[in-house]
Image (cartoon, rainbow, N blue to C red; front, side, top):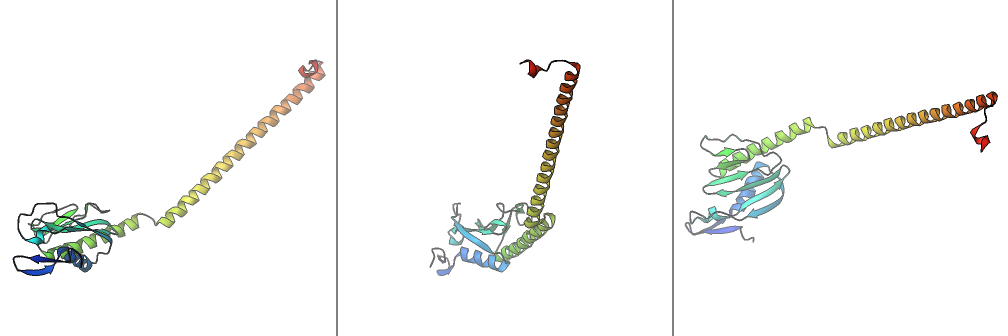
Length: 196
């Protein structure tokens, strides 16, 4: 049994399921799959003797990035500030619930489940719209390779054209030298190579 699987509540004198297990259940019910999890110790000094508020938070790595669930004073704090979409804003069920970009506070597990389900929908919408906005990687790679091939072809054609120009210029210079040499011979002007 893990350290946080069960806790003893002195008020009820009963052993109950620890909060990380309940967080995992909330994530499962909300349809959130995760690959890694990490327990974060409670960093605040508890203002109550209730051990529920002193338990660690659960941080998980989802396909959308990091998601944190844990008690913060008397509310369940859900944070996604370190996710790929930190600017998502969830509409709370009641107006008195604190919320903002990247977090929401919930008074109880029912509200936490509702918030996680809304968050899942928002994440999936963002992923869907991002997939529409950006072509798939394979298409991007194919276009990049095609553009690189076109660029190389254009570069090769330019270099070939430059080489043809150089050859034409060299031919012209050579032809000019030959004609100049023959004209000088006809005119009786000694050639500079013959003098040496």
